[in-house]
Image (cartoon, rainbow, N blue to C red; front, side):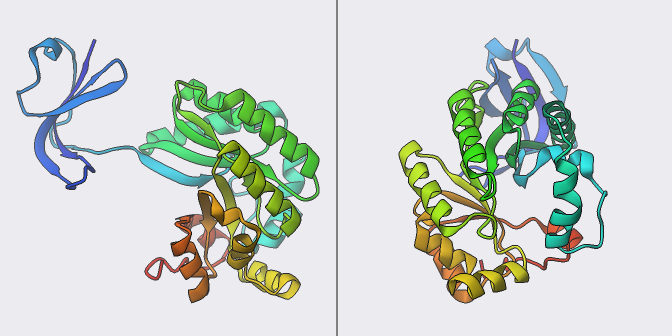
Length: 286
């Protein structure tokens, strides 16, 4: 039976950015059939279930462009610390005690919160990523999922990334897809990043990575390699493929030129950046 969302103000997000003052949306077999002027729904759908949206705005679902959804269960456990201390002294030690079931339930909780907030799609990076995929399939959210890849556990994290791809790519009626997720330029050497780039080419997968999140990260990268994190990714070939870069707080004008030329997608994470005092992404320049 069709579902009719009736009488709402519809923000279409189509090519013309149309906003319809009052319209009916018809959904049949989980697909949007059409958007019709009020009382102009085709007869074959008239007997459908009706959801009254008068006085409401109806728009496409929001997208959480960068998440570690299972970390919902760790919310608030470490405050007033910079990223390096927050990760190394509090979060990573705590995560060592998490089980597969913990990640599954944490992911399910986080996704429930997302859906209640109007978020219908997410891009996630975490360990036990197959449990995140399992939860996303069950709850029905659209998800781009990656297993975080690190220097210290290169073989394990890479093997789990490939297993995630084999088991979950295009699952959940096509809602679930897989990304390669090297954690960051400070936690993956240029050699490993280059290997990720080659794998992205072979499997035709996007890359999801933290980038230029803190001033410390940028300064260390320049000291060790003579390049900013953005320039380093460009040099090793990561930016040859579709890239979702999280944070991008500390960027030079040259970095922004590279990101623009390479058509990198930036998730700027204002709440995370505020919590950790990392700074504010240069959105206007981007």
